[in-house]
Length: 354
Length: 228
Picture (cartoon, helix red, strand yellow):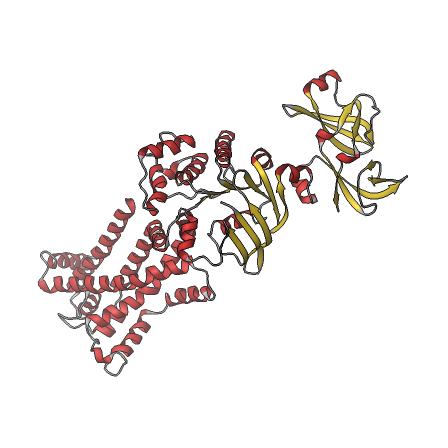
């Protein structure tokens, strides 16, 4: 299902929950709505699912306008959507009762085989007869997902489906979600879990205080955030504030102790430099290269992240986080107290206005 | 104390077996209060559903009104119904005064705000979730109502039982509009009141036992239903 949202707004009393949202969602990739608690993620999902009425604006479902739909058309459209609630909403009764509720509303007959199949897909094999409200938190979430998958909707709306779950349950649900998108469903997932967003997202929508901050391809939004909020949220390791100045014909960001050379059309005003750790080269000695920025300082700490080692390096009072492979770390004998050189290109510096 | 025990013994003796007069009083009590509760519920259940699910202007005022109506003294409702059904009142032509009809009307009016308010309070935590669940799985309007009623059935049941208990134990108002006419509008509470004042303490106790048993039976039935 193709979704388009135009100038969407929603308010409760005088409080604006969502304001002026323009968005598009397409099938095939997982659309992730990112934002802190209270950013308006759940509200957006509820509006898309026709659970609440927008205060203003329009939603187009495959071109069909929300505002002109009759009650029957709304019901028909809801039957093409599947919603997974953040805190599981289950009927009193068995797992199977819960699964059969949706088909019953549509006067559909579902065979035992299909029930078994969907339970298998969500890792709930053999739980048909169990009392749904006695399941564990992770199982409840998976039951919600199974209940929706059984109906085979075109649009999946998932509201933090893995909040407060153990890692194994998270993995199960994430796998199922990725599969749905691959099968050509439109999947919209709200989360504040950055790792999950990195793992699943094709497209990212970032909301803050009810406003759309940035929307686009996941890699783009995460590596070239348009605002400091996203950079901070996406845990960008190196965010360094300073003042842009022109020096010897080059634009540099004056950060007090350090001046970082950048590429910018502006040559004045406050800005923050965002430098991804993987773009910074670590060496024992200063290296001569075309990279414009090179700083030196002692390692303060070494953290083992599994695949890579993260170093905290103090360059004239500014703390950089950089990644090195396990092997280079051993070869260079990197340890706290040892001085290293950090080198990165001016083009690796992403500037955010302050 | 022995005076009480003696009364209890004699009262119990009057019920074994009960006279046809006592049986008639019991039957009328159950019928009047049962029908009144049923009528009140038929309006109160949809009303509480509506108030729980819909957002609209003036909703808070309406809920406040229902809650206030719950505390209107029964005797005032008796006064109102008396005014409505007496020969000069707007419903006087129906000739309802001092008939079971007037008693049903008064008791239904008494029970309605109570059932609505109690059901609404109990539905608060249930209705929105049940609505979201049913709607998101594709329920149409009637399926939605059915699903919410089903999820909130204990809320309704508890409210209805409370309403019934309130009206079957009501005396003054019932006396005002029913008249306590022997064989026609005499119910348990009005009979207890009359017989005790006449000095027939044992008969009062006997009828009191019946009233208590009726209340108990209803509550046991409720708990049986909730256990399911």
